[in-house]
Amino acid sequence: MPAEHITEFIMVGGFLGAGKTTAMLRLAQHLTAQGRRVGLITNDQSHGLADTVLLTSHGFPVEEITGGCFCCRFDSLTQAAQRLAKAQPDVLLAEPVGSCTDLRATVQYPLRRMYGDRYRVAPLSVLVDPFRALRVLGLAPGNPFSPKVLYIYGKQLEEADIIAINKIDLVPREQTDRLEDALRERYPRAAVLRMSARESTGLDRWLAALTAEPGSHSPPEVDYDIYAEGESLLGWLNCTVRMSAGVPFDGNRLLMDLALCIRRTLAAESVEIAHLKMTLTSDRGVGQVGTLNLVGTACEPELPQALEHGLSAGELVLNLRAEGRPETLRDAVENGLAASATGAGALAQVLYLEHFRPARPTPTHRLN
Image (cartoon, rainbow, N blue to C red; front, side, top):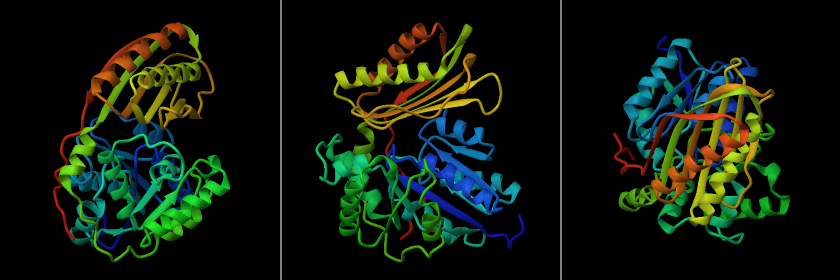
């Protein structure tokens, strides 16, 4: 890449289930329509990401960073950006792990100081799911997570340059007003805006905020002991499953049945789901992908992208994050797979399954 080519680096943070991947996809499409070249970087504690499947299915070049957050895999992040540089992107969109914080000090500042000749680092966006944010801030009943998990949630908001209230199409206006007022009061240094990534509304205002100069305030202090204990309370499960049947089956129905089975099992164990995300890719061709999201044990699963036809074979990628024992998550997924596959008249062959708790975060760099 010529030295004079400066790439915009936009990191889209936020807690699990905030809608970051959909927002990245819509922003990538928005920028592409303006004639700008876009590359995307996904991130997870392990491999086998539904996010990567979804973004790739829309034709974007995607790099996947696994084995830890951007802060702990900083060198992998810069290497991934360099691989994407072959296409000379104007913009790189990067989505960190949803349970990570301290991104200003461990990702943005090092990137700006060490690679400022290559990247213009945009203000840090933190997206929030309004249903969860209303409960976390005490504006609605219910508080599903323990204090140390909520510590991470609060630190994400504290370090944000931009707090974007996502999914406003799903929340009554008066509740959004209350949430915006509370966020402005508690986090006065951040620009607070509203958007619906799903409906592609508010993207112009978000993009305008991203072109501003990042805030000059210092990153918040983070107690890494509390941070690590909060992450360790979260169970993590990724799996890839080969689905097949003698006759075509309804893949959308299978996704929904599987999500409901998992939710029912975890609710009985008093486990709060942070995010369940699935993709089911048909063997019929590129782009034949159905997606499902579930962002809380008390919430309903959604199919933001449905399969258009039945399928006889395909690949299911499932990512589950919840505050509970990884073994409990594994049992819920395995039982759900057996039940939903039987109901669809299909065979589920697990190709890969990993369940664990995230390791203690150990940043490669931390600059103030």
